[in-house]
Length: 312
Image 1 (cartoon, rainbow, N blue to C red):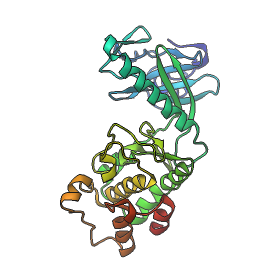
Image 2: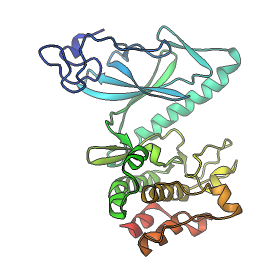
Image 3: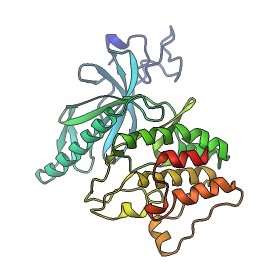
């Protein structure tokens, strides 16, 4: 449904329409139907009486991300909806818990989702971090409104182009690593730095997905990690981790950029360390990667700034 606020804009991507009703960017016709599975909010739906949705641009086991148009600021945004598909379904616009026994899981997950929103909202004006613009509850669930990023993941970029030169990899990752240092200054640990969670847009790179972020030194009872990127201490329950965990994951991300491969998983390295640093890398880069990827936190860089200093 086209509302008055988006007349003249493509309902598929919110770019301007030509006089013939064809999008000037995606080239789709304005009257072309937008397919939408029943479990998603339908295109044209409104949230908070302000955001008009287009189609979903991403979906995982715990949420759906939609392209949307902010009618107040006249800008495209991305809206992440908490939708744990294993335990909920949709009735109209409302999210419905499938079974009574799932209520506690849903409530706990929703709280963590809102914690992510609060973590993001507390971090502003950082070059390598997208801005959280709004968060709210509606339709029986929760939403985070984010700066819209039109780009590809660093993982896809490397897979398409092949391994990067040292200077190119550092140029891409510098704003992310620099911003991550400031995130640490704010008392937060990301815990999921990876090539999958870095989006490359025109001239910039941004670290996304703060869903696993925690306050520094907080113990978590559930193991949450990304294999090959996580340090050994992240595999242990009831263990407080600090910014050196993000140093390890950042080192793994840089390693992937420079080699096109992931480092061996930390738990396997503890049994037999087969981490190989290619001889073609400069001695300075080899030393920096070895220190960032040290298995013991005490042997790693103490923070992102010292790591970044050694690779610049």
